[in-house]
Length: 436
Ligand SMILES: NC(=O)c1ccc[n+]([C@@H]2O[C@H](COP(=O)([O-])OP(=O)(O)OC[C@H]3O[C@@H](n4cnc5c(N)ncnc54)[C@H](OP(=O)(O)O)[C@@H]3O)[C@@H](O)[C@H]2O)c1
Image (cartoon, rainbow, N blue to C red; front, top):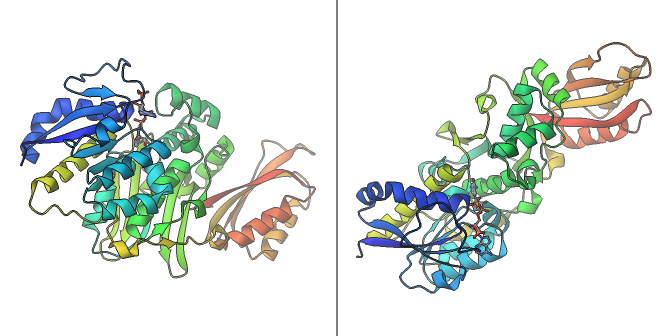
């Protein structure tokens, strides 16, 4: 056995540089734990000559992917370039050659799960992707190994730090969505193109990955209901606060009698719940198993070092397996390969939960009666209601907010559709689901 493990690193961006720095700083500690040295021998990046301000000595850098893939001395390929096509090709080619692979690429793993995991299951190489969900929180290892004796009933969590940072600023500082986003970008908590984060797509990628691990199948990313946070207004945060809630972007999936329920959307979370106290760029994931009960993992969800720490954890785990005579590892998705089949997610119409409905209506006699009549006719029962207006100005619209008891999404949509056509309604009704 060689006394070192050779790494080929794709990408020297935020995470890639973190990996290099962490190995430079903790290399000798890691050697004590693994018994062998981990060394990056090659890196491939789009602009090999770019000045990066880190110590890259002993690393051969180029922009040719084959420099890593065709190097027989490289044991583990680390893919940190992101995106779909090139990353997929790098991972599939590396696994085909029997190399082990570590990646942080949640978009790829969620959208091409069947293809990637099939290759991971059938390759001689091992596969690590802890860094793809919730950065420094070892949630993949927890589900894949520690909870593998449990039937997982429910997973939910705050799994996008950028969205959580924005919503936290909106509620702490009374900011609008746009000014909170701008501040997040200035402080480096949101990328220049924050689309995936604010539209819920990044959280959805992670939720699908957690579902695949927890529910013994591959779930179709396209069938997941996704709603982002751009529509949340200060008035919603203020009224939610009056009712004892905070607004969080939650990803939630349940194994229900009827099927698998899963969704990513802004959610009103009770102020007394643990998730309500997860603020700023932090992440938290709750897992409920039929024997372990409720568990919660909390930590930094992204960023250079929390993510590189997850990459290093995978490298050491794979390094240990490669160093032992038993080179097996837990199955990539916890279950055996014959379960690598697609399963459906229930349509959002079938969801049953409580709702926050904010109607914008003219301040006129009989308005409330029209709203409640339509809700009643659609089987929706009202839990409480307030009207928000500074002073009574005839002809000016006011906000009427109704919280419902548990209702069906289909009925809620039918009622909103009806109500939004009424002449007393001046802007579309806002709906936020409540975590009951
Ligand atoms: N940033 C985070 O906090 C975080 C957290 C969890 C997971 N992730 C995931 O980690 C991955 C990397 O993210 P990142 O934030 O580190 O991205 P990044 O800062 O944009 O870095 C991407 C790197 O990939 C290189 N690259 C891009 N296109 C390439 C190409 N065609 N050929 C070769 N190299 C190419 C870039 O090269 P140059 O530098 O030479 O231009 C850059 O070094 C993504 O999958 C992301 O979703 C990131």
